[in-house]
Length: 203
Image: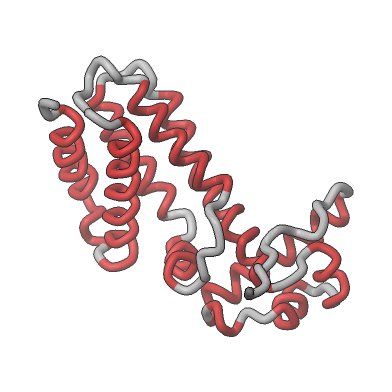
Protein backbone atom coordinates (compact mmCIF):
# COMPACT_ATOMS: atom_id res chain seq x y z
CA UNK A 1 0.00 0.00 0.00
CA UNK A 2 1.56 3.34 -1.05
CA UNK A 3 2.56 5.69 1.70
CA UNK A 4 0.32 8.75 1.96
CA UNK A 5 2.09 12.03 1.32
CA UNK A 6 2.03 14.39 4.27
CA UNK A 7 0.69 17.80 3.26
CA UNK A 8 0.46 19.51 6.65
CA UNK A 9 3.23 21.67 8.16
CA UNK A 10 5.62 20.10 10.68
CA UNK A 11 4.91 22.97 13.05
CA UNK A 12 3.17 26.34 12.96
CA UNK A 13 5.18 29.55 13.41
CA UNK A 14 4.51 31.35 16.69
CA UNK A 15 7.17 34.04 16.97
CA UNK A 16 7.48 36.96 14.57
CA UNK A 17 10.79 35.72 13.20
CA UNK A 18 9.44 32.25 12.44
CA UNK A 19 6.33 33.79 10.85
CA UNK A 20 8.58 35.85 8.60
CA UNK A 21 10.49 32.71 7.63
CA UNK A 22 7.32 30.83 6.69
CA UNK A 23 6.00 33.84 4.79
CA UNK A 24 9.27 34.07 2.85
CA UNK A 25 9.06 30.37 1.96
CA UNK A 26 5.45 30.63 0.75
CA UNK A 27 6.14 33.83 -1.18
CA UNK A 28 9.17 32.26 -2.85
CA UNK A 29 7.17 29.15 -3.77
CA UNK A 30 4.41 31.29 -5.28
CA UNK A 31 6.93 33.24 -7.37
CA UNK A 32 8.55 30.07 -8.68
CA UNK A 33 5.15 28.58 -9.50
CA UNK A 34 4.05 31.61 -11.51
CA UNK A 35 7.39 32.09 -13.24
CA UNK A 36 8.45 28.53 -14.08
CA UNK A 37 5.71 26.11 -13.04
CA UNK A 38 5.22 23.35 -10.51
CA UNK A 39 7.84 20.90 -11.77
CA UNK A 40 10.71 23.35 -11.17
CA UNK A 41 9.65 24.21 -7.62
CA UNK A 42 11.96 21.94 -5.61
CA UNK A 43 12.46 22.48 -1.90
CA UNK A 44 16.09 23.45 -2.51
CA UNK A 45 15.12 26.08 -5.04
CA UNK A 46 12.35 27.42 -2.82
CA UNK A 47 14.74 27.70 0.14
CA UNK A 48 17.33 29.48 -2.02
CA UNK A 49 14.74 31.92 -3.38
CA UNK A 50 13.40 32.56 0.13
CA UNK A 51 16.88 33.23 1.49
CA UNK A 52 16.66 30.50 4.13
CA UNK A 53 18.58 27.29 4.67
CA UNK A 54 17.07 24.00 3.56
CA UNK A 55 17.19 22.96 7.21
CA UNK A 56 15.05 25.93 8.19
CA UNK A 57 12.56 25.05 5.47
CA UNK A 58 12.29 21.47 6.71
CA UNK A 59 11.64 22.72 10.24
CA UNK A 60 8.24 23.87 9.01
CA UNK A 61 7.44 21.80 5.91
CA UNK A 62 8.19 18.08 5.41
CA UNK A 63 8.13 18.25 1.62
CA UNK A 64 7.25 20.21 -1.49
CA UNK A 65 3.62 19.08 -1.39
CA UNK A 66 3.11 20.58 2.07
CA UNK A 67 4.49 23.90 0.85
CA UNK A 68 2.18 23.91 -2.16
CA UNK A 69 -0.80 23.08 0.05
CA UNK A 70 0.07 26.06 2.26
CA UNK A 71 0.50 28.33 -0.77
CA UNK A 72 -2.93 27.31 -2.05
CA UNK A 73 -4.50 27.71 1.40
CA UNK A 74 -3.15 31.25 1.69
CA UNK A 75 -4.27 32.16 -1.83
CA UNK A 76 -7.78 30.73 -1.47
CA UNK A 77 -8.14 32.32 1.97
CA UNK A 78 -7.55 35.75 0.38
CA UNK A 79 -10.28 34.93 -2.14
CA UNK A 80 -12.61 33.72 0.60
CA UNK A 81 -12.26 37.03 2.46
CA UNK A 82 -13.69 38.90 -0.53
CA UNK A 83 -16.57 36.45 -0.91
CA UNK A 84 -17.33 36.55 2.82
CA UNK A 85 -17.42 40.34 2.87
CA UNK A 86 -19.89 40.40 -0.03
CA UNK A 87 -22.16 37.71 1.46
CA UNK A 88 -22.31 39.69 4.71
CA UNK A 89 -22.91 43.04 3.03
CA UNK A 90 -25.71 41.74 0.78
CA UNK A 91 -27.54 39.70 3.41
CA UNK A 92 -30.61 41.95 3.25
CA UNK A 93 -30.59 42.55 -0.49
CA UNK A 94 -32.89 40.77 -2.97
CA UNK A 95 -31.59 37.76 -4.88
CA UNK A 96 -30.91 39.49 -8.20
CA UNK A 97 -28.89 42.32 -6.66
CA UNK A 98 -27.01 40.05 -4.25
CA UNK A 99 -26.24 37.48 -6.94
CA UNK A 100 -24.74 40.13 -9.19
CA UNK A 101 -22.61 41.42 -6.32
CA UNK A 102 -21.51 37.87 -5.49
CA UNK A 103 -20.35 37.25 -9.05
CA UNK A 104 -18.52 40.60 -9.07
CA UNK A 105 -16.77 39.57 -5.86
CA UNK A 106 -15.73 36.24 -7.38
CA UNK A 107 -14.28 38.05 -10.40
CA UNK A 108 -12.35 40.36 -8.07
CA UNK A 109 -11.13 37.35 -6.07
CA UNK A 110 -9.82 35.64 -9.21
CA UNK A 111 -7.97 38.80 -10.20
CA UNK A 112 -5.87 38.78 -7.01
CA UNK A 113 -3.20 36.56 -8.60
CA UNK A 114 -4.65 35.01 -11.78
CA UNK A 115 -1.47 33.27 -12.93
CA UNK A 116 -0.90 31.70 -9.53
CA UNK A 117 -4.54 30.60 -9.45
CA UNK A 118 -4.14 28.98 -12.86
CA UNK A 119 -0.99 27.09 -11.89
CA UNK A 120 -2.48 25.91 -8.59
CA UNK A 121 -5.53 24.57 -10.42
CA UNK A 122 -3.84 23.10 -13.48
CA UNK A 123 -0.39 21.94 -12.36
CA UNK A 124 -0.37 21.32 -8.61
CA UNK A 125 -1.71 17.87 -7.64
CA UNK A 126 -4.95 18.10 -5.69
CA UNK A 127 -4.14 16.37 -2.42
CA UNK A 128 -7.15 17.46 -0.38
CA UNK A 129 -9.69 20.25 -0.01
CA UNK A 130 -8.31 23.24 1.82
CA UNK A 131 -10.15 24.75 4.75
CA UNK A 132 -10.45 27.98 2.75
CA UNK A 133 -12.17 26.12 -0.10
CA UNK A 134 -14.55 24.55 2.39
CA UNK A 135 -15.22 28.01 3.79
CA UNK A 136 -16.23 29.32 0.36
CA UNK A 137 -18.64 26.40 -0.04
CA UNK A 138 -20.20 27.23 3.34
CA UNK A 139 -20.47 30.90 2.37
CA UNK A 140 -22.34 30.04 -0.82
CA UNK A 141 -24.62 27.75 1.17
CA UNK A 142 -25.29 30.63 3.59
CA UNK A 143 -25.99 32.89 0.61
CA UNK A 144 -28.77 30.56 -0.53
CA UNK A 145 -30.14 29.90 2.95
CA UNK A 146 -30.46 33.67 3.50
CA UNK A 147 -32.84 33.72 0.51
CA UNK A 148 -34.82 30.56 1.12
CA UNK A 149 -38.02 32.52 0.47
CA UNK A 150 -36.73 33.84 -2.88
CA UNK A 151 -35.44 30.65 -4.48
CA UNK A 152 -36.99 27.44 -5.71
CA UNK A 153 -34.61 24.52 -5.21
CA UNK A 154 -35.31 20.86 -4.56
CA UNK A 155 -31.84 20.01 -3.26
CA UNK A 156 -29.90 22.71 -1.40
CA UNK A 157 -26.53 20.94 -1.47
CA UNK A 158 -26.84 20.25 -5.20
CA UNK A 159 -27.74 23.90 -5.78
CA UNK A 160 -24.68 25.02 -3.79
CA UNK A 161 -22.52 22.68 -5.88
CA UNK A 162 -23.93 24.01 -9.17
CA UNK A 163 -23.59 27.63 -8.02
CA UNK A 164 -20.00 27.13 -6.89
CA UNK A 165 -18.80 25.17 -9.92
CA UNK A 166 -20.53 27.43 -12.43
CA UNK A 167 -19.06 30.59 -10.98
CA UNK A 168 -15.59 29.08 -10.51
CA UNK A 169 -15.30 27.54 -13.98
CA UNK A 170 -16.69 30.51 -15.94
CA UNK A 171 -14.84 33.22 -14.02
CA UNK A 172 -11.57 31.28 -14.07
CA UNK A 173 -11.81 30.67 -17.81
CA UNK A 174 -12.66 34.30 -18.51
CA UNK A 175 -9.82 35.70 -16.39
CA UNK A 176 -7.26 33.39 -18.01
CA UNK A 177 -8.49 33.01 -21.58
CA UNK A 178 -10.97 35.82 -22.29
CA UNK A 179 -10.25 38.90 -20.17
CA UNK A 180 -12.16 40.96 -22.74
CA UNK A 181 -15.36 39.36 -21.42
CA UNK A 182 -14.77 41.14 -18.12
CA UNK A 183 -15.00 44.57 -19.74
CA UNK A 184 -18.09 46.61 -18.96
CA UNK A 185 -19.39 43.82 -16.69
CA UNK A 186 -20.56 41.71 -19.63
CA UNK A 187 -19.73 38.36 -18.04
CA UNK A 188 -21.17 39.36 -14.66
CA UNK A 189 -24.48 40.36 -16.19
CA UNK A 190 -24.84 37.22 -18.30
CA UNK A 191 -23.89 34.94 -15.41
CA UNK A 192 -26.42 36.72 -13.19
CA UNK A 193 -29.16 36.01 -15.73
CA UNK A 194 -28.22 32.33 -16.04
CA UNK A 195 -27.95 31.66 -12.31
CA UNK A 196 -30.99 33.75 -11.46
CA UNK A 197 -33.00 31.63 -13.87
CA UNK A 198 -31.65 28.46 -12.29
CA UNK A 199 -32.34 29.52 -8.70
CA UNK A 200 -35.74 31.03 -9.42
CA UNK A 201 -37.13 28.20 -11.53
CA UNK A 202 -40.20 26.32 -10.41
CA UNK A 203 -39.33 23.23 -8.41
